[in-house]
Each structure stands twice: as C-alpha cells, then as structure tokens.
Image (cartoon, rainbow, N blue to C red; front, side, top):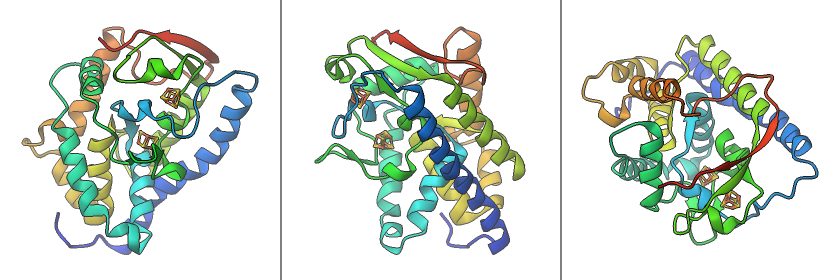
Length: 251
Ligand code: SF4
Ligand code: SF4
C-alpha cells in the first residue's frame, strides 16, 4: 500500500459508510432479539465453530471494521498483521462457485482473522458484520463444528438480512460505488485500501486485471451465477419473515 492519504473530505464521506452500518446494527440487534424471543438459541459466548466459515460481507460492513482499527492508535498498529492474515486466508480460497468455495474453506478449519482462538471470542464484536450478528442456530452446537459438520437448524431472520443489504446499498450509492459482497478477508483488504489510500487507488485496483481472488466484480458475478443456479446466497426480499431452516452439512 502507498502511504499517501486521501483528502479529508473524501475520507469523511467514505467513513460515513461504516458509521451508517454501526447505527443500523443497533436497530437490527434489537429487532433480532424481538424476532427470536422464545426461541431456544444454541449460540453462547465462547462457541465459535461458525467463525471458521468463509463469511460473506458487504463493503460498508468492512469499512465499519476498518474504521474501528484506524480510529484507535493501538489498534492501528495491528493493521499490518491483519493484512498478512487476510492474505494467508485468501490462499485457502479455491476456484469454483461460492457454495463450493465456502464448503472447501470450512473443511480447512481456517479461523477468522478476528477470532481470538485462545478464548474463542470475537475481537471485533461491537462491529462484527451482519452475517455474524444474525447467525444463530437452534440445533446442537456440536453440529456446527468443522470436524462434525452436522445438519444445523439455522434461524433466518430474513427481514434483517434484507434491511442490512438495503442500507449497505444506499450507503455505497451515496459515494457512487456498487454494492460489493465478497468473503470477509477479501472485503477487509479493500476496505482498508479505501480508507488508507483513498478512492482513486481503490478504483484503480478494481480494474486491475491481475486481481484474481481479490476481484470484487468477479465475486459479484460468482454470487449472481450461483443465485441463478438456485443457490440461496444473496439476501431475501424485505417482506420475508423468520424461519428455521435445516441446512445440509458441507460435503
Ligand atoms: S452458530 Fe453454532 S458455532 Fe456459532 S455460536 Fe451458534 S451454536 Fe455456536
Ligand atoms: S468477525 Fe467475529 S464473529 Fe464474525 S467470524 Fe470473525 S471472529 Fe467470528
């Protein structure tokens, strides 16, 4: 990365992406509690098998996390190590459709960069993305582990996913960017690039033909292709309700 900083006005506009998501999380967290009231959720602090999944997040969610690190001097010092970790994780992403990629990634038991593996706690809990915030199951936690890979009964509060996507879409629309959704380590590299190097460097990276697995447009194409082939990858419409779905274990 270059050390040239973006202009202050631009930075303020870009950081607004993350702030928008943090405000939304407060609202959606309350809604999640309401929607799951009475359900016996299996998820507990220190239970973290789901942190070995290749989580899909939007760019504004990534910006919220990147901002969290950039706003604190001590956390800022951790950014080079984070970058290395994201690059290492990306090495485990294989070719293919999104579902196949996520299944093979899960089998490799690669923990999320933000997981403290000593305590099994999320180190970015307050700004964790929606896919983590609203990922809950009512089945035996044992089934979630990459070793067991059992059937999990996942609670889908569909309206939250839709609200999150809609707000992320509005946020990127305000800075004239498409809504990028991609695996967390990929999005995090781009989010840091956007906030540290600025829009011009970000835009130049987007059209770099050498991007490979970091190609954000490529991920959007993969997601659309999988969706067209019947995989439920992109979030549902806003009027969807709350369901419990037994998901097949990764093969
Ligand atoms: S989804 Fe599974 S692994 Fe994750 S917290 Fe819930 S029970 Fe634990
Ligand atoms: S961001 Fe936090 S909750 Fe989400 S996968 Fe990573 S460690 Fe787990």
